[in-house]
Image 1 (cartoon, one colour):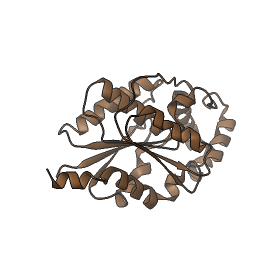
Image 2: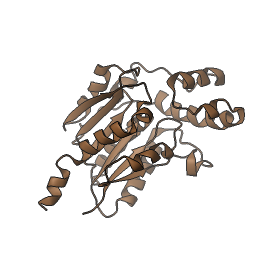
Image 3: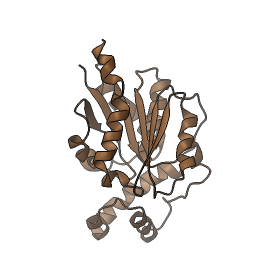
Image 4: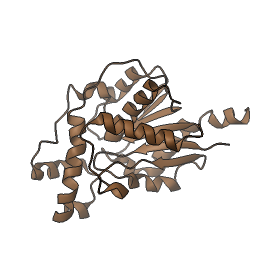
Length: 243
């Protein structure tokens, strides 16, 4: 049986390493492929992208190269990563390439709502931006407390926030991909804002809520990975048995 790839995209300022723990928790039938973005992790010396289009195109090429054998795959993204996963799916559809079997988005209101009610963050002075990072959680305390590390980190997070601040959702044809939407019950997004992801696909779309705030995925790795495994593998193994 071919692997079932799960390509994972990180939140703003995040590295692919945030998904390392999932290697121990996700179903063995799923091959986890965290995608690193420029400016962090193994790509620390590279400049972050200044607009979302070129970044999405790079991600499309990476997915295509990784999956040259034509295996089934899905996309997952948290926060900014959810937006990247969605736009990546649209880009793959435009190119007529093999589509993901599933799209899982987490910690972000539906993209069509971002333009209407988004709090710009990229323009904030360093001390205010740091305060917002503390409020949101997810940034290691050792980074927040280390001035030199913050001087390295702030340009990366600011560049990522700029992608969100300047994002403009374009109405296009709905995706033909089932979706799973994940959120924390103490996050800023309302249930209605998360349910509005349903407007973007003709496929089945389910919302699942976990205890916690914006970075609930760090507090519930087993629960989240179980939900992901269920969403991806429901009916999938049965399909392979009949091939």
